[in-house]
Figure (spheres, rainbow, N blue to C red):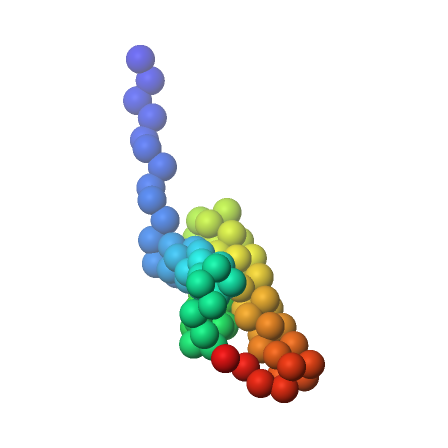
Amino acid sequence: MTTEKPTPLPTGPARTALIAGILSIALIVIYFVTSAGAFTLYASIAAGLAGVILGIVALRRHQFVGVSITGLVLGALGFLTGASIIVFALVFVGAIG
């Protein structure tokens, strides 16, 4: 019988980056599915930026590298998608809402 220690759950900036990245993507999906309005895009950009920053902080501390990279990538995708939708709406449509 082997007595292996269970791997610890991610904590601190790594977990928060993952949560912020998932929230950012979820807000983009909510925007497209329900036409919830511009607030969801702004919230997605904010959550994506938080995911990117916290992912970088967690990577610099060498904490849960896989979780940190996932939060960083999801945050970047949410941030870039939200920002590109806003830019598209302002440039080509002339309004947002």
